[in-house]
Image (tube, rainbow, N blue to C red; front, side):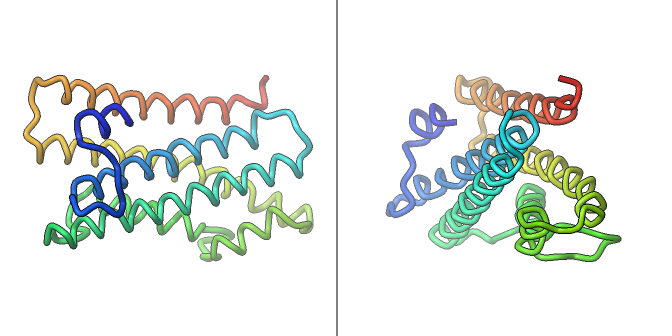
Length: 201
C-alpha cells in the first residue's frame, strides 16, 4: 500500500492543497483500520494466550482504533471530492464502504434489534449474565467476520475503481494494484481461518 501511494501516487497528506495527496489518505487509513487493525483485533481475541479480560481490552482498543482510522479515512475522501467537485457516494465501492462503516457502528443483536456499538461494547466488556453473553456471542462473531469481508470487498472495488479511472492497463502500477488486491484478500482469508480454527489448536 505504501509503495503504491508514496512511489506512484505522490504521497499522503491530509492538509495538502493537492487533492490527490489528500485522497491518498483514504485508502491508507481504510486499509490500516478496517482491514489490518480489525483483523488483528479478531486474532488477538481468539489466538493470543492471555487472561480473558486482557484479550477483551486488546480487542476493544484495536477495534476502536480501526473505527477512528475509518472515520478519518472517510473524511479524507469527502474532502477530496469537495476539492475536485466530484459527487459523493455514487459507486458500488462507496455504497459498500458506507454500509461497512455504518454496520461497524451498529451491530445487529438479539433478533434483529439494532443496539448501538457502545451498548455492544458494554455487553462484552463488563459483567453480564452468562446467558446474555452466550446468546449474543455467535452474532458478534458472525458480524465481525462479515464486516471484515465487507471491508475487503470495499477495498477491492476501490482499487479496481481507481485503476479504471487512471486507465491503467499493463503497467507496473497496474500489476502492483493487482498484487495489493490479492494480498488483501489473502490476509482476510488467513485471519478468518485463524479465528475459525483457533479452537482446534
